[in-house]
Amino acid sequence: MSEMWMGVIDILVGLFMLGGAIGNWDWFMNNRRARFVVAILSRTGARIFYGLLGAFFVLLGLLAMTGVLSSG
Image (cartoon, rainbow, N blue to C red; front, top):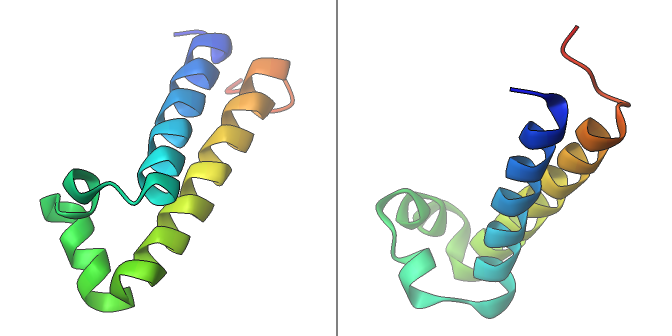
């Protein structure tokens, strides 16, 4: 798969995480994996964690799409 498509996927995943964090979606935070993070960091901490992780994925996707990051 080309870097462009991997970048698009990274951006979509990042936006999904940002949406869950900013929107404070119950169904997002009650997910099995997110419950683990909530148990460790509290709900607010988990929202910050997923917000930062989402921003990282968006940045990673943009860098991959522009060719700054390449797999080969």
